[in-house]
Length: 415
Image (cartoon, rainbow, N blue to C red; front, top):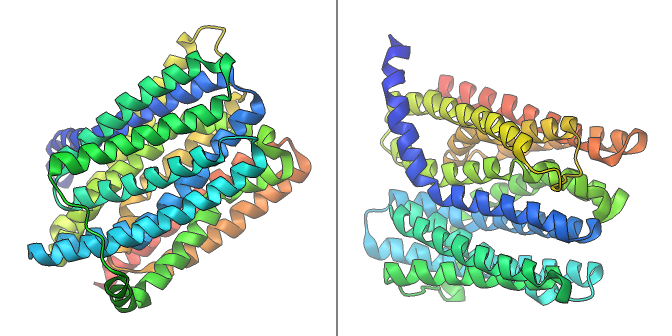
């Protein structure tokens, strides 16, 4: 009977998820196409640098999300007072600006060592990308998903136009520097579209208000900071180990395999934006039956999407012309799919743990997975070609999947 009750809900949930993550889907297609095109015109070294910049920018997004967007989303979802919600946005918006600048500075510093030019453009790209990510999460929490999706459309359209122009001029200048400028402009345009359509003023709290709010939240946020740092080491440590061992060129085959499944990771992020405020409201109302249904239903849908994407990708790869080459073996692609699918399957329990602010358990689990995964990566780098380091990353993600569901099961039984 329970299965019969769940089955009719699946199409409704699938339709809702499709609307909510349509922006992520557009960005995923754009990202995949851009990477495939860049593989054909850029050197292996330059492509490895581009992939590492995307990882560094993604790491910056995790800190912006955990320290600004995530607490803002929880507090806004639970607030029924407009002035209070605006004060929350102002405080966490100011914090997001600071963190985004830190991520941009780190990116520019690394690029100045890897490239002759393009450090400023790369830093600006990461800064605007981080701010747009924060705004999207806040818009989802405010129930303004449509405006966030329109911002995604603006980013994708302008990014495609800019990238096409850069690739057409690939023989005339530094491809990476021009591409970073194009992506920075696309992110800036998307921010203007979201704020303009929302008719919102940019609200940034003064430093004293910012410090006062973070003093109140620091007890929980310090564990959030620790958990996201360990989670980043667990999730992206493999990339930096390979880059340190074999250089950007050695990381390129792994990046080529991972880029094929980048839409899955973008889908996971979009799902989190949709699910986080809704699950926060359910938990605030103590609606345990609905929470149980969510915990059963959402992972099932994500699993179907993950397997469906793999099937569609395998068909698409068979149709690619022979002139399009990917420097990744089939076995490496399978490991990349596993490493990308696992975060989709533990997205729901991770959100449940975050809303409960059980960052200590998240940190411990991520630490265990990081030790296992990076240990395997280190051994593989000593004994085999660098591209097989993805095996360690896949095992690490499987550990997180099993541990996340075990923590949720234990927490639900306790309640």
